[in-house]
Image 1 (cartoon, rainbow, N blue to C red):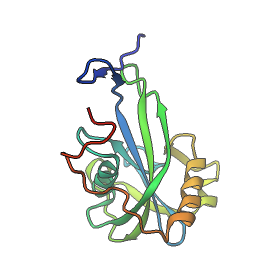
Image 2 (cartoon, one colour):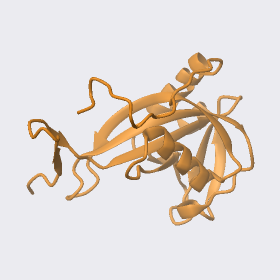
Image 3 (cartoon, rainbow, N blue to C red):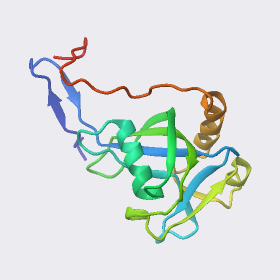
Image 4 (cartoon, rainbow, N blue to C red):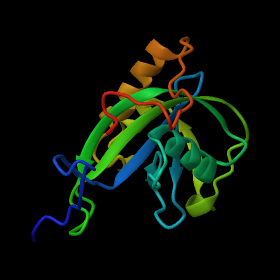
Length: 179
């Protein structure tokens, strides 16, 4: 099948950019270095981190925080720390290049109440040694349990840092990347 990836051309007509659909994964770690995983009600026994597609006109961080509210509940308070990993994968024949950004957040409280497309899901806080068990089926990220270990390692490094990860956007501001 030929590449179905759309392309957008810059206003000057010279530069072409790939327009790839994007997904976000939210790795939420608590003070005990456990990770929050949910089990979709239609996929019993299979666990996943909070995840979803990035909406148009949404930054990566905005998408991560929206997915946390939608899937873990509006009362959950989680402080963003930064990107754990980014990769591409083949979603289907029409979406051959899905960009995925894995984001790390610290759980700071609030009731977990799965909603949106995860309504009725079980949730659980997992230690890395429990996730490593071959009997634990992780569907998102599929076959990449190592990412959860990286998330915990980065949590240890970043948990005490206060960083403004996403300053307010000034639509009038110009950078070297602005046309």
